[in-house]
Amino acid sequence: MIGSLPPLTLVVGGARSGKSTFAEGLITATTRPRRYIATAQAWDDEMRTRIAQHQRDRGGDWLTVEAPLDLPTALAATRPGEVVLIDCATLWLTNHLLADHDLPARTEALVAALATCPAPVVIVSNEVGWGIVPDNALARRFRDEQGRLNQRLAHVAGLVVTVIAGLPLVLKGALP
Image (tube, rainbow, N blue to C red; front, side, top):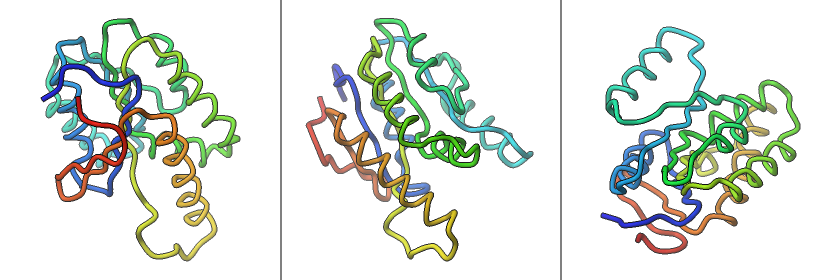
């Protein structure tokens, strides 16, 4: 499908929209070694099962790095010649929100790390702003912060794709 990727690609969509599958397809279409940076944390059996299923679905030819909070360090360890998938920015943001970290500072650190990463990066993120206004302050803050993060990432990305019902729609740039 593709020959090369821009330095940053953002793939955004709703839950179970097919965004991760699409992003993985972008990565596997290259001939580069694959690095998967996972942001999920396995707090319970259901999440452990989900993570194990994702790993089986990807197959064994990915180097998996767990980075639920420190994406800049994980990106700094990337080698030239690789291609990176971060799945996903939404869980990364959630981890920082629940830890009561400075979200604007963490976002800017992530953007800076993406700018200096020696390999192309595809980052998956959820679009959570199309639903109803949440009924509690934490959920409203999460929705607002996720929207801000997606806007910031889209601004610096060379390619932005939304996935709806498994169908990709290019919002910015062009598929190589």
